[in-house]
Length: 342
Image (cartoon, rainbow, N blue to C red; front, side, top):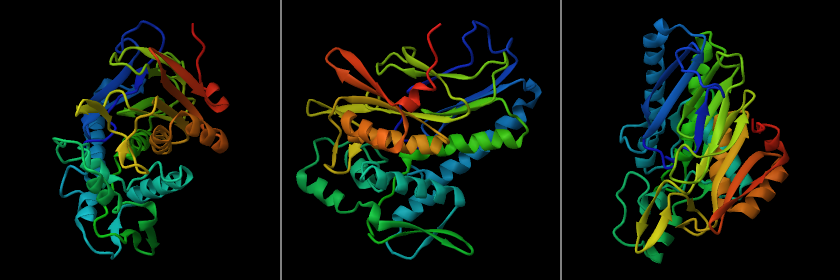
């Protein structure tokens, strides 16, 4: 599965010490998945466990991809999107949780975070379909908007499991906005099931950590400056066992008819966002939760995003483009995670 949000707005820091991974006795397992990268850092874990852990990690990621991919025609989600009826279709408990979380956040953002926005994502060339050779017409956008809407999708809990139902035949659900968080949480649970309690795991821009690194210090995560330089650090946070996710408009884009088009689509307009908010970072109890909120806030723009974050008591860090520089806005809840410069 290639994710709509393929930016890496999070940089992982094992510690502030200039020591190699090997001397810190940290086992690092990393690779590619879902059109992005994953990284698992395990403190105090013997290197001899790497092969077995890597096999489990990649099997879990392959299963998540099989559930959520819109790029693989045989995935569970693709099969649902291809189905043209309204009979509830069976889905996994994990997928049901991701959709329920997405629907709840979608409602709280007044539809700004909308997992049914797939027809518009595809129309603008950010899904499995190729980029358009010209800007979509108003008629095309209106037709795509007619196939979206959170009210047309529901998760049904039955005695034998979970089911997903749509009442629009052409509805195309796109879970890319929560895919990284979904997979990150699953990796965290996998690591803990192996008796490992000190770790930091990430898939794309979603991260979860527990315990301390091999130096006995908290794992740290750096928020990237919204530039093309991936090593440029905006701020550093101590997650304190929480999940974090960043969404941004500055890395995944293309140019069409002389305009730069962001991969983040506003369901209300049917167009890519054009406002000055370029990065939204959210800290939440799970990476899935954080991953859902960051996209919705990006769609809303700085003013509305801050108002909603304050209303919902979210830990949010926003970066807005202002001329040739950037302006930061954050909620009091986020400040508690900020690490003071050394």
